[in-house]
Length: 212
Image (cartoon, rainbow, N blue to C red):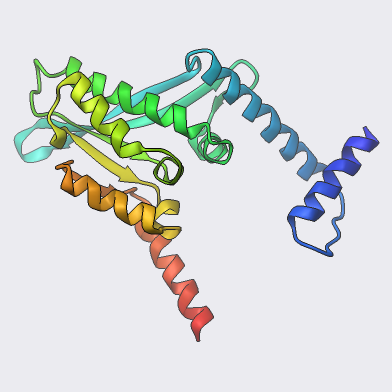
């Protein structure tokens, strides 16, 4: 056990930067263990046809007409080891491990399937799907989106792409081109993740402080 603690402490000190020391804390080690085990569970879930993952759909209602106009896709995860895990914990791990790439594509397909299944009842129903900056930077995500839309034969404007706030802050040419290509391919719109405005304001405020 002491060797494991030592290895953890050494790794932590290296991550903090060169010529740094780290004072071992049991709480830090427990967090590290939980993170490692949870990533293993996520890997296993992906390898076994996404067992444990579920996509829930939150309706968005047009109040004046008393009708559902769109759905928001919400990813959930549960496993035997940890039970139900909050998205605020498992989604960053999906991004860190690149598992968000297969999981994100699976969520996209599940979402389009939901639109198709409800088409007889709400023909113009839209679905909001969150796309991670990892997918934008590391995969041909636009091609994946168009392939799935064509496969299920829905209108392009029935998909609303939402981008994570981290993707906005860390934006580069890939991010900018992706947004441009969405419009060129007549995807209805791209909208920032609901919490993005807060993060953008915070980021700009920090930048101004640094500048002055």
